[in-house]
Image (cartoon, rainbow, N blue to C red; front, side, top):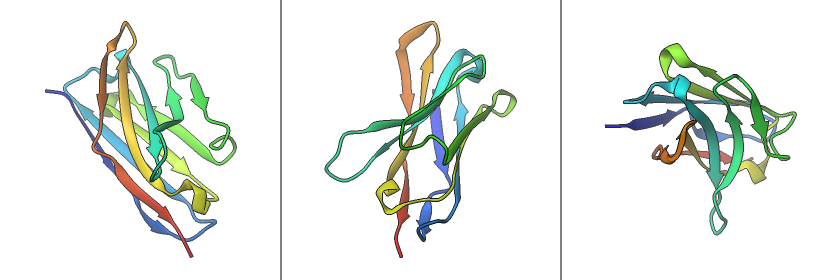
Length: 118
């Protein structure tokens, strides 16, 4: 059984930093593209950042320059370092894993709430 478990969300003030973690079980992480998505109330889920099996990364325009995604395949983990957080970053953040060789094998975590407010 595949599980993705996120942690690290919370309530922070604008300008703060936060680190999200996601640990996967039941998969070989190096065989998966892993990433973070977010969904704000009333909006569609959107990509924040992805890290490819070879270490390459993709960021949304809103994440570029403020967020950093990294992974540790030995720990089956992916991280999202977020800095200079803004109120518009408020959302539920979801961890995602997609098999590199079979995109139909896709898994989601349960989500972690990030709230940026003064």
